[in-house]
Image (cartoon, rainbow, N blue to C red):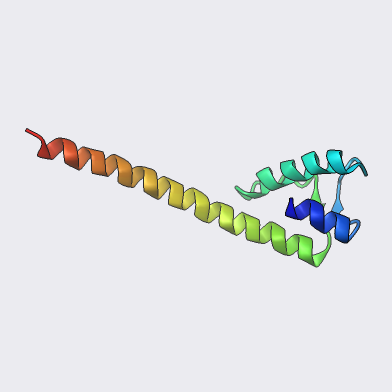
Length: 89
């Protein structure tokens, strides 16, 4: 949603959007967001304006932390189950 608001407030903030329709831009920018989270970013849609670039790299950083925290939580849950299994006779 932030990317759509940015593109509405500051036109031409992104290069590579195929449509000028807000509904189509929403789906294209949702795709951009999903490939930015794991910092994959294929390069078909690129942020041009400084505010769009800032949100893109912040999303990539938060995405990396999200994956790290999720994996740590899953490993913690697995280890917790293992130690509880050992304590039960």
